[in-house]
Length: 76
Image (tube, rainbow, N blue to C red; front, side, top):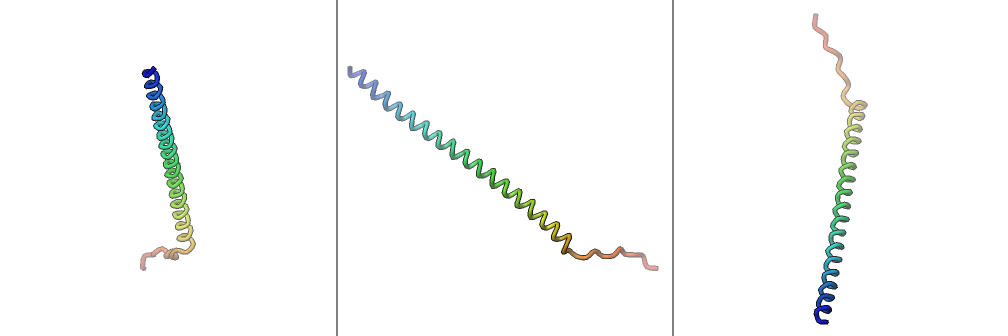
């Protein structure tokens, strides 16, 4: 009888530890997935900002840049 109680107590403790470990692993997995998603979104936002900035710079320079100089001709 005492052995059965000990086994039951040990099994209940083990189940509680296992459930706690599984919950911690699930939380860690969700945090990692969220972190990876945020990093991916940040990388996309950075790439879009860089492309937009470069495009704006090229268009602005083409419209407002220095006037082209006439081709130099050889002196007679």
